[in-house]
Length: 403
Ligand code: DWN
Image (cartoon, rainbow, N blue to C red; front, side, top):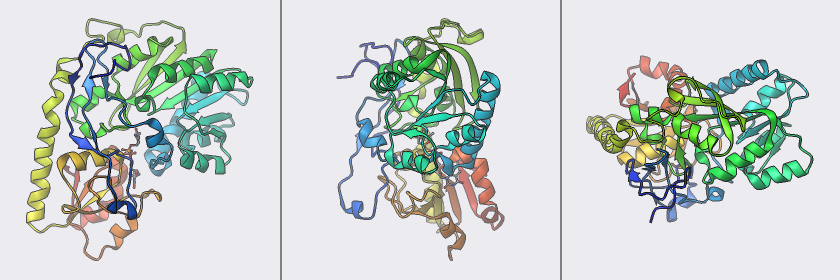
């Protein structure tokens, strides 16, 4: 029995957007001891609401089980650090922020953005539920509250005398929220009347167009397009006043919203005929992951039959959806490299491929013939690091393309 739509509450039957089988939690990297233990697999079958077109997963795994001890450290990617640097500078200029401004960042992770605002002399407070990651920011002297965003948190902060934020930033977190009402209502409560809320999320239109099915995993409870995000905010009293397409994480959107302001965006974003209805492309997506799987399986297994050694670059969450759905395990990839200290020495969930330090790739006495970039959203940054391997004739594969 399907639960009601997370966004609009519709109880109409939702069609399957795709079916990626049974998968482990994408950020649940395994220690060597855990290799001997059972591993939880959950169905990975997103559906699409016929009334508001939100693509969504049910709340199968509790947010506490996913986020309180988290493995993703955003500062590990230079591209992300540059992105938040540019964002902080843009917001200071656009909103006239200064030392008297009040800024909150939801899901501040290891403080990458907070550090940028500090460098600009603008105070910002992070809210980060992953205690292991919040600690990294706190040790760097960055004000970080280890909590989930929601109504209870907002009431507690307001009752302590908080005057309301001039800016609330929420990057790559709205998709991770099982209770949209609680999350967005908490944000609206914490905004000053003149405050601005910016929310960034990967554009699900790109997921559909570019078959980015590997970005589907259980901690991503929702997959927003501009329309469904616009709808989600408006239903909780946040009026979208501007929108930007940004080139990160496979193509994302940044919406600017104000409390209780109902300004339709110019152009196609206005609630036109397509608003709230699944598009033909979304309805036709169902078979696209299997097409990708066939092509990747054929490539890797042909190379394996030819005696080639294959490894992966990056141990991103999306890589686990990719590998587990496509049936790629340690029999195909000898190892993956990743610079995240908390991931090194562990094993990928499901495929149980070992994660090693990038230095191991450089020092491998039997250099790989094929390197599969699993963190394709950082392709340009990673390709530069693989130049010497490409120059010696290794095949560098990124999303089925040989670079
Ligand atoms: O929504 C989310 C996105 C924004 O970030 C979260 N659910 C979790 C996370 O997803 P992901 O793990 O797929 O993100 P990334 O940024 O694609 O992960 C990149 C991985 O690759 C990290 O573990 C860091 C690593 N890396 C590396 O080892 N060397 C990355 C780069 C650029 C490198 O040069």
